[in-house]
Amino acid sequence: VQLQAFGGGLVQAGGSLRLSCSASVFTQSSYNIGWVRQAPGKELEGVSCITSSGGDTYYLPFVKGRFTISRDNAKNVVYLQMNSLKPDDTAVYYCGVAECGDGWFRWKDELDYWGQGTLVTVSS
Image (cartoon, rainbow, N blue to C red):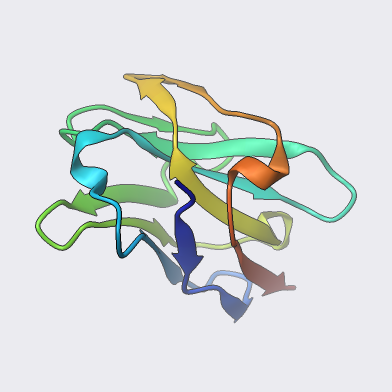
């Protein structure tokens, strides 16, 4: 099942955005959900992940302290709050079911696994 990412846009460096991940016919609460991104000309990289209970998370070191992943299982939504955005955060962001735990994240590097992404552009 592919999930859909929402909430991207154009923001100045230092600004904030909140991305949402949802699927209308899929109950996310039983699954770990991860966020990956692909910058122009670069490989897909794992950004953050949260376990089904919300008890464990992973952050790419470059975003740690600036991004916060959370989930509202009652609303069937996973969020990625992105603060202090930098031009290097510019990418298409995708979400999906993932393998992760406390401090680790294993993501599939096939782009077609991740579904429709949302573009985040950070201007300098």
